[in-house]
Length: 457
Image (cartoon, rainbow, N blue to C red; front, side, top):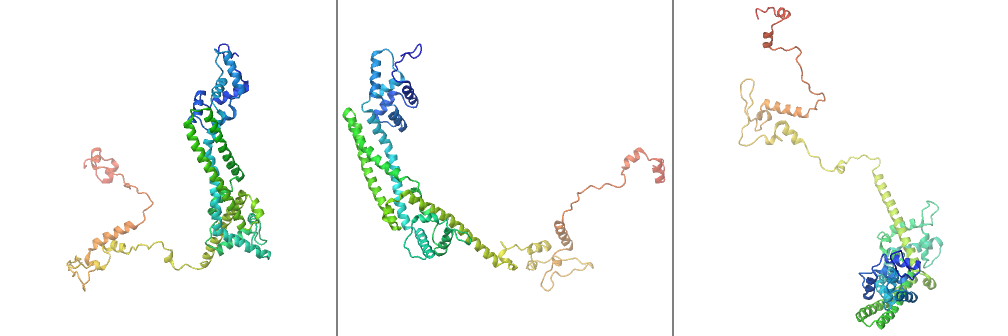
């Protein structure tokens, strides 16, 4: 067939099939590179998505392979189309589908194993923690006691699904839920308990897992591992040069088979522990077998979350009541003991006042041994002794002028600043210099005011 006026290509595929292959090739390496990657199982060239795309939609059938070969033999000078050339290149690989499936199992195994093993370990750990949890035991015993008291019966267990109804049951007086009263009782009777939700993290994670899907994944891993042995045998049978591939894949498949067997054993043992825990909680054997893991874990996790929320509200209410009781103790009373309300002892300013007054903090510093005080002059010209009765006074130590200066400084510093702005005062009369007056002369009125004339001036 002719594609355009100048370029000719051999196309034997249907238009829809050819377009699908061409679209897939836009995100894949060239055909020869893909062939080398498949033969070596090189993850650096092709990823998991590329392998799945080839395996699902781009595997050549025997009929397509025969048509392409016949068209090429009929027109050896005309090149094949892009889709036809790609299918012809893939068809040259022996056991193409077996190689792709074996390669895909190798890439998927680690991730699938992790998706199966982690929930199993969480369930195992969650069962152990739930059975040893003191808060959970106190809650169950309190619920059982309250139920026996309200119903007037003496039962030894109750259905765990009753935990979902605790927030819905309310009293007729204050309209508070049974869970609220349960939290109050637990806090009063068992003050060392916790909020429960923070201690059962594995149970919360198990509630988000689809355990039916997990069992299906485990069975699929086992079946794919068995099929991979058949794929490897078929590859080695038709391709004798792949001895290195056979050694590596044989080691990998043997290790994978051993791990899958261990996972199966762990799965059975964890399920047995789960059933035993249900029997420990009071479930009949028939109900324990039918109880789904994710349903049970979801009931426990949601109850623990509601319990934590209600418990926090109860603790806040109790703290608020305690604060109100403390406030009522001092309501209506005068506060006379101010020492308890002072943040720190105020600094005394007596010493500063004494220094500003006379320069010394007290009279003890005024009398200094070996020094004589200054004498104060008196009005009659006579001097008075510096010491009277062995004590030196302020009037003996300082002059009156010094005391007045210090007191004036203190008063000026303590005085409030005036809000009125300072202005320069002008003279009431007009001032004239004598030089200008003599130079310009006096007027007649000025001469009369002075009682003279120009000749005298």
